[in-house]
Length: 108
Length: 118
Image (cartoon, rainbow over all chains, first blue to last red; front, side, top):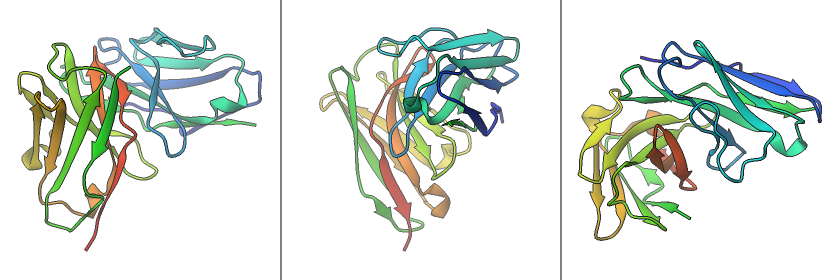
C-alpha cells in the first residue's frame, strides 16, 4: 500500500523557521495537503494543493514541492504553532487517500 | 460555514457492528464535487481514511476495510452514515467525518471516540 513518510519530530526556537518534509512516490502526480492537529482537536488544513493557503491561515505557513518531496515551512514560528502536522495525498491512481505518519513540532 | 457533527455509541462490543452518523449543516450533502468521508485515528497514530460516499450514492472504501464497510447518504436529513461490522479492539479510535473536496479534507467534525470492548 502507498505510504507518505515524515520525520517524527522537529524542534525550533520561537521566531525561527521550521521545515517539515514529506516524501512519497506519487507526490509528483498528486496534490499534497497539510494539516495541523492540536491535542484533543480535529485536524485543520493549513496548505492545499501543494502551495495554497486557505483563508484564515497565517501567512507564515507555506508549502513547496520538489519531485517526490513536499515541504511545509513555518516562518517565524510562534508558541501557538506547537502541534502535530500531517501531510496527506492520494495514491497514484487518485483512488485512495493516505496520511503521513505525522511530525510533532516542538517550540523550544 | 459548513459544520459536521458525529453521533453514535461510544462503546461497542467485539464482533458487533459500529454505526455512526454525521449531520451536516451550512451546506448540502446533495452537491456535486464533494465527497462525504470518514476518517479514524487510533490514539497516538496517524489518521486513516476509511472511505467516502458521493451524493449519487457511489461509494469508495479503503481496501483494508472494504469487506466490513457500508456507507450511505440521506439527503432528506442532510446526513451520511457509516456501518462497520465484526469490530475488534483494533477498531478502537476517534472517528471523524469530513468533507473531501479537490483531493483534500477541508471541513471536519470534532470527532467521536469509539472503544471496542466487552
